Structures are given as C-alpha cells and as structure tokens.
Length: 399
Image (cartoon, rainbow, N blue to C red; front, top):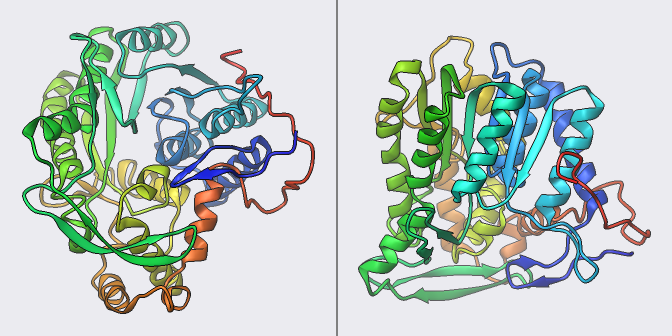
C-alpha cells in the first residue's frame, strides 16, 4: 500500500516501515562512524526499547560495543485494518540489521509494568544470555496497571499550586499563541502521575532481576529524566511530571543498595530536550525546542537521540577514565550542552521576541516538524513515499 502521514493533534496515526528501516540504518552508521566503545556492555536489557532514547540505546550497545540485546516494548503489528506502530517497525528493522551482522537480538512485546512480561524476560535471559551487565529503563506510558493491586493509574500533565500562562506553538500551523493551564486540583492526580512515571516499576524490575540471579557482577542500570530551563519549570519540573521525575531520581538510592553485593551502580541520566511524541504533547515545550534547535544548530552542538546515547555510553557510563562523571546530586548530565549559559541566554532572548510572524526567522520550527514526522518514518531522505510498500513487517524473534 502507499503510506502517507495522517495526524491528529500531536499524534501521527500512520508509520512507514521503509522509513523506519532507513532511520535505523542511519543511526547504526553514526555509531559505527564514532568507533568502538571500549569496555562497553556485552549483554544488555532495554526496557522501553522501541522508540526515542530506548531504541537509540539499543543501537549504541549493539553496534558500539557488540552487545547482545533484549528489548522489551509494547507495540502493535499491522492488521487488516491498521498499520503497525512506529516502534514495531523500528524494532523489526533493528533486529533484521543486527542479525545481518551476527549480533544477538531478541524482543518481547507486552506490558513492561506486568509481572508476566518481567517473568518472560527473565526466562529469556536465563536461557540465552545467563545474565545482563546493563539495564536501561526507558519506559514512557500515560497509564499503568499495578501488577500487585490491579489498580490502573493515569498520569496528568498539569502545574501544581497555580495556573501557568505562557506562549506555545501549534507546530503544524506555526501559530504562536498564549495558553493558560489550570493547576491540578487534587493530590490523587499527583500521586497517580508518580505511580505511572516514577521509579517504582524500575525498582520492581531490578528486584525481580536480582532475585532471579541474572544480574552480572558490576552491573549498571540507568533511567532517563529531564530538567529543562526555568521557563518550562511550572509545566514540567515543578508540575506533576516533575514530581514523578523526582521520584524516579530518588529511586537510585534504593537500587544502589539493592546492587551492593553485585558491586553494581544505578544512575539517572538527565538528557537533552528532543522531539518525541511525549514532548510534543506538552504545551510550551515544542516552542522552546524549536528555539533551542535554532541556537544549538548555529553553534554546531545540536544532538538527536543517537548522538545523545553515543555520548552517554562513550563519555559517561563507560568513560575511558573508569569513573562516571555526575553532578552534585549524583545525576549524569547529558543535557550539559543544552543548559550552557550562552545557549540558554540566546533561547531566552528569542523567547521574549517570538511571534507567529517571526517564528520561522527566530526558530527552527521546520526542523521540529521534520523530526516529528521522522519519528514515524516520514520525511527520510532516500525513501519514495509514493511507492507501494509492504506494511506487514515481522519482528524475527516474535513472529
């Protein structure tokens, strides 16, 4: 069939398998160009492995240090009435390309919050890898069913304490407008957001893996977070999502204690603002990112997910010095270039000036739009989007 992008708000309803394949090839080529990551991981579990930082982590581990990888994700294959999801096509392409180079790669599709998927993953590790030396936790979901109580929680995206008013942009139309978001009105919404996006499930994964005896000596585990600039604090870091991120970061203490006898280490990596389906849904953030892209590209320090993960692995987690550089509260900071004083000063100046009329001049809104569609396999160089494409793509280890 001929596959074109169809959108509804910040959601793209279609995905292109050939575009996904080319995206995976491009990211793999970047990792190979950067060279081998010395002393990198060899047996890696990526939880939330199909899009964004998760698939970039898997590529970096596999093609940067020759690691065997197991990916866990919740995606949908194509059906007679629907295309497969972008994450499904990404994962199918990754496995195909990894197997072509003799790399072990298997995947498990299902709810990572569930005990069943944890047990399936542990069984696969025991059967094939025996143990893992790196666990990446990169789960992004708007809701979670607790595996012990059966209760389902839904996250909310709201400020806390007072309404938040600022500029935002519709990145499809380029219209800059003012927006006011009302604050959360009950503690339950904050608690539910923490239950979905906080650190409890990361802890439960590490507990299950330890109890099963599948963690290697010196194992490392890392989860991903974001801080951002002060202008987004009310809706992000000081809002309901920020409370969940605080909980995620606090989980490091408990996990480090859990890993003591294995001499393991747990970290939270604070990453750069990037175009993802999640970030596109947060008011204010798309405008900030489009301004940020303009500044960072002009300074030749712009990064996407694969560049971020290569730097995380090569310069932080597996630093040539043997130690992991962290900030004063123990976090890895891969947002260091974004948060540079000169970068933030220029973004703030543009923020104060930006309107619908000068958006194209002051920002990289076109780059933002392009990266959004590239998440779904569209606007990839070298792909003929008018060509007939087979949407029925299988993941070798699943089908």
